[in-house]
Length: 100
Image 1 (spheres, rainbow, N blue to C red):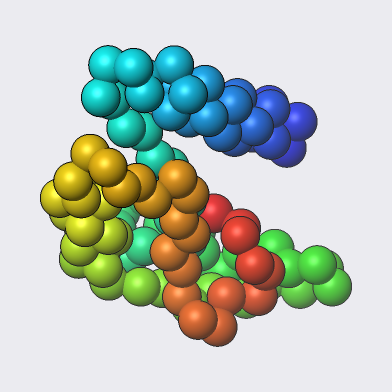
Image 2 (cartoon, one colour):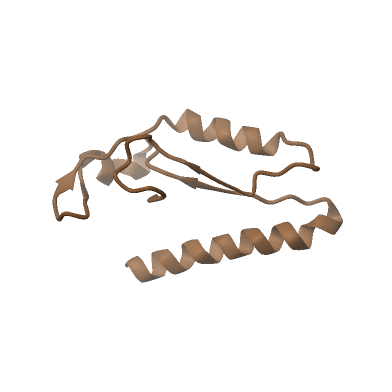
């Protein structure tokens, strides 16, 4: 399932960039937040143990979902003459940068 997952992530990034450019003349800003392991019900596998690059299975660091909510509020509250194009919010000790 890694190919469809990767393709969809790249598609969203492309859509974010296109929307940002196309929306400028209409005062529409668009940004993307890539979220690491937020402590929600969707992260059960990471909390119990996720496959690692070395073949082992380990529980991964989590961040409180409120941190993600705060990032969304920050981006949404910016004036239209400023934009966060891309933001990655993840636990500091994640085993991979940008995974999630």
